[in-house]
Image 1 (cartoon, helix red, strand yellow):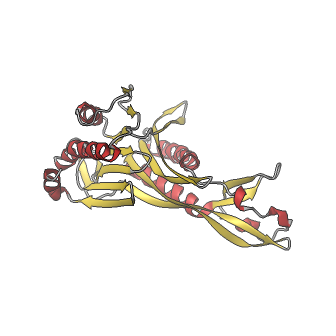
Image 2: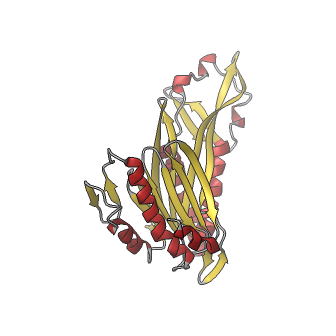
Image 3: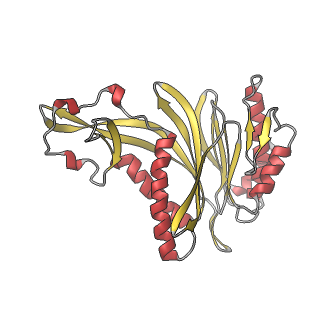
Length: 306
């Protein structure tokens, strides 16, 4: 297991995770990075004089996945998912109405070669399908279901997958930050049961060790400097906050410090299934997202600076 704490606004991202991978009571590795970046793209077929004339590419930008749960299962999910979104997506026309649609093809589009097409098969810029967080999580959900079912049949145990996907999407020339959580922890009637929800800006979401997270979230949200007006707490310990209109940068900075002050000691002191190194992914109001890793032995010094 692990802990990942995630917080974002319309202008920034922050995520912090431990680095411990364990198997039962045994510590397997302490330097794992549980926040990964990936690129998402699809191929656009080009037709000339009725014949296939290669592909151009639509690049959706950089996105990120943070994970907790069974490392073997999650590795299979991430490998299959990144394989699809980096190589197998192809833009085609719906054969019934001609609308553009993106499909995953195991042949990576090679099956389009050798066919005959009218030149109006080509796609205009206005027809290009945006790569959004929701689009990507739809693919991820399909992969989770397949991998979780395979895992459960062979390992004879329930799946244990918790993922946060986040990134900046471009739709109609407007950039916006988005995040979703998707989980699969059990089977219902023999099928993987999926829990999925969007993360609200200025809310705190944690995944990982259920014996530690509720208390940690409660302590973070109980801090007077973390509190904001017009907040309401739901049963999942998620804090929904109306975005501040004054001193947003300073308010956000305080929040990040409070999250660090509560999560870093768990990692430093190897609480529960949490420990090892500490990975932080952070972007600011005027800076791109950067990831850094702090070794466990350096965490005490880092805490003293907060």
